[in-house]
Amino acid sequence: MTTSNEAPIFLVTSKVKNFIKAKQGLNISKSFFDPLNNDVEQTILEAINHTKKSDRKTVMAKDFNFYKENPGVSEILVVASKVKKFIKEKSDLNTSSQVLEQLTLRIERICLDSIKRAIDDGRKTVMDRDFVTPTTHQQEVPSEWGINP
Image (cartoon, rainbow, N blue to C red; front, side):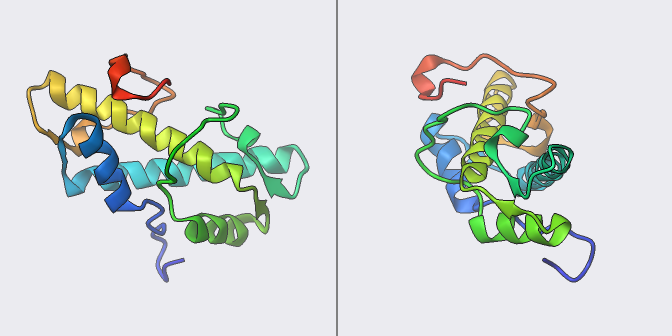
């Protein structure tokens, strides 16, 4: 973890960029990563709280409010070691490997919603203003984008 109160960068930014590029050929603004990383941090903290309330010692997929069984993600979009270290330092809890898939699923959902917003605005770049938390808003995306939310 960083020495200040800043959260670590959980995202594998190159993979997130590739995900967005592969879906619709859009570019991604550097400013998009801050709200996305903050969302991942908040999501992890909520999962930690749920785990503690459930009186368990391991954060699991079911601790996330957007849980999807067998999400079938093709590529993990978070840095596993940073996620596990963050959870351990914040709570002394262990981390199930399924956590990485659930976080990736959330990131994919956010990216798809953001792509849709950028396209609707006539832009070829996904920006921070396209970010919307998926628990409060979910746009329909074309089925040919290859993700079944």
